[in-house]
Image (cartoon, one colour):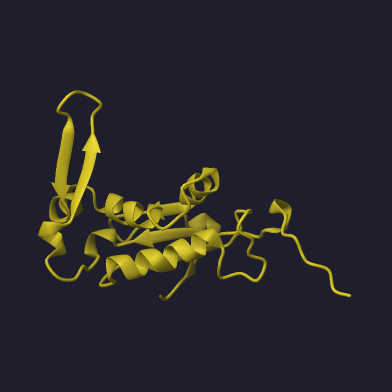
Length: 143
């Protein structure tokens, strides 16, 4: 009789991956990255354990979007003061903070729990082609 294997946090081996976002579509890239952060690509995946790997995204400023999304998609944040709602289009966000666009897209695809907040910390996004994580010897991941 086979026993069910229960994944424990000590069993998880974390790898590092580099993803080049140049020319990739925003949502398609974000869903693949979210899958890796959750650990769904591993045979030991368990929904209650953080099994995911670290992901480094480079060239975030060269992401591609379809349709008229650059001008129609809006990002909102509130300062906490009366009338403090700020609205920014995707084009403005890409010009000012290109890494936030990908972080926001991936965060929306992760669970909204303590586990999800732990998973998003394994995502590192950089606007240009350089990153400071060479010591971890990340593998290039083609999506």
